[in-house]
Image (cartoon, rainbow, N blue to C red):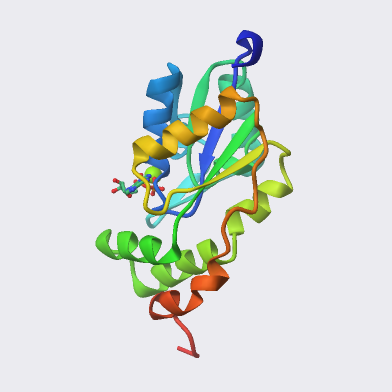
Length: 186
Ligand code: ADP
Ligand code: MG
């Protein structure tokens, strides 16, 4: 981007937030390669599948990301991509209710839905990313089309903006989220 430098961009966020949709469109518009982190891990035989979960060896994955994807123009899609050695992290945010609805549609269990709605509510990806990287852009996707989200990202990157955080506060809409949470002791 800057002076023709190669960039590795992570698109992260809670499952259902829109990572794959946005990452593919962003890659297309920038002329970058699109890489799904989970597929990348499987391809390089990093980690193993237990049930339907992929247990990843983190250090090994980070090493491979650095070896294979750094210095290529790549958009890396995945809910763990913010833990990888990338040049720019994009964290997508959405009203936790939307996360709940989308995951319900995907047939997730109540527990899994609650877990992810709560993760969105309390900014898990952002907090983890803050430990890893300075260059973090958060985008609220609520009530926006994927196209609008991508244009927002492009506009920030073109202006050289690498950090924009603290843009949502889902605590304010907590009442709307209660139905999706597994409260109480079951
Ligand atoms: P993830 O990869 O984070 O699990 P997906 O991209 O697979 O999310 O799914 C997100 C869903 O939300 C898709 O059905 C997509 O069409 C929809 N969606 C609605 N609005 C947006 C938006 N602004 N950005 C991204 N996805 C959106
Ligand atoms: Mg996805």
